[in-house]
Amino acid sequence: MRVLVQRVVDASVSVDGNVCGSCSNGLLVFVGFTYGDSIESIEYLTNKILHLRIFPDENGVMNQSVLEEGGSLLVVSQFTLYGDARKGNRPSYQKALGGKEALELYQLFCQELKKYIPCQTGIFGADMNVSFTNVGPTTIWLEK
Image (cartoon, rainbow, N blue to C red; front, side, top):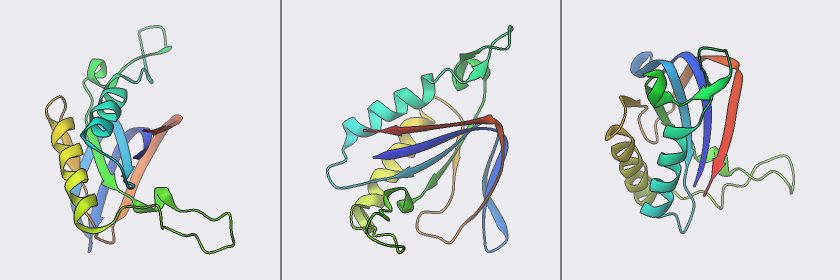
């Protein structure tokens, strides 16, 4: 399981010109799944995301989590996080989990996050347009 976390002022995802999810003052979370991912992977990365100290405290030091900041999340499925371009210019996605299994893990991941924080999503498998304003820029790669 791979997660790319970006601290954002605002973020939204749209499908066919219609916004289906958004967040403000929070985290844009791109997530991809691979073979062998499990509920343990989801729980581990949920904990990491919720407790990453990448928001400024009263002294301007990145020392607060999204929970402490009172922010929200936008979660977008992105199988291309498992793209491998080491053997040419066309990435291979053989390590990306697809279909029903990936959808089930995506839904579990979003359900787990929603237990703790407001969380909106894109539409799994759709051709989505993602807009965001990254702060910092602050971008963190997590993997389990």
